[in-house]
Image 1 (cartoon, rainbow, N blue to C red):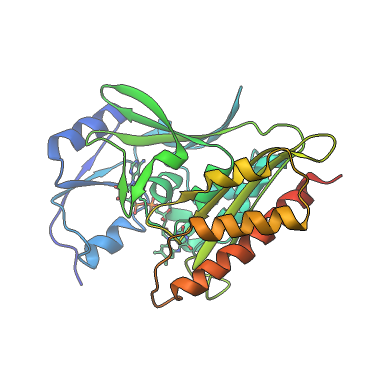
Image 2 (image 1 turned 30 degrees about the vertical axis):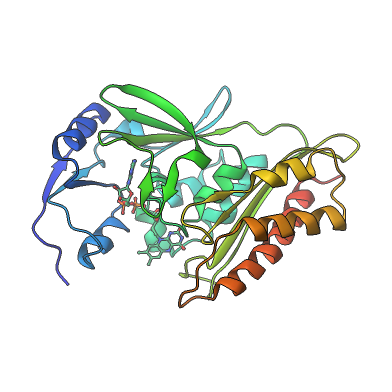
Length: 290
Ligand SMILES: Cc1cc2nc3c(=O)[nH]c(=O)nc-3n(C[C@H](O)[C@H](O)[C@H](O)COP(=O)(O)OP(=O)(O)OC[C@H]3O[C@@H](n4cnc5c(N)ncnc54)[C@H](O)[C@@H]3O)c2cc1C
């Protein structure tokens, strides 16, 4: 299928991109790496008359270390994030997602902004970013605002972004002492298969190994990435023994709202959430060490 005739506008600055979005909304989409939007246009999932190309906005590229954590520019590709020397230590859990999604060719073009703000329910980065308490920096020609990553996506391909707003960066706060995170996902093949279900966990422990903080997030099992708030309440103050992990897995299964499709039934996905939660909890604990 061919892409229908579209006008592509190259934005040189964030303000210009925002103004173009405002001018052509709702007949417009952003073009970052194009790995989703061009497929959607080709398959007529939607049609628009205008694309605003972000490639010329240098400010949107790259991973930097700030006083309070990592700043990941929205135009940073998945490969660039995966290979960044700053994605080390406690931040290295991001690689559980970046190293396993899609293929090297797709990862070279696909951007963090497209993965997060594209709001596709099976996207791999949102759960680990939510578990790590990341925030989204939204920008428009009127200014900037910050939202918690778990509040950004509200449904399939639907976000809280206003007509003239775009995602400028994702900020991941500096992890505390005795912190470990992990993302466990299941796909029908080892490579180039989207997640049937994914679970991310981030934990910080006290010296006596009780839980100081815990965050669990899911993907591919609800219309939007799912932050399992109740798991935090359940785990804080406890030792992560078998019983606590089983209860957290049960909570995550309850929080999931899976559908049945060609990749698996709703029941199968719910079971996967339980298994992946236990795996991610074990991997996160292992990364904390003794
Ligand atoms: C073969 C194949 C396999 C794939 N496998 C996986 C996989 O395993 N896991 C996975 O998570 N994804 C997978 N994907 C999906 C895709 O590669 C990612 O979601 C990608 O990160 C999208 O980024 P992009 O830069 O290509 O976005 P684009 O296609 O350019 O844009 C996608 C959407 O995001 C919006 N957008 C882009 N940037 C911004 C921004 N800065 N602010 C606001 N909105 C923005 C656009 O308006 C558009 O609606 C796969 C894709 C393909 C083609």
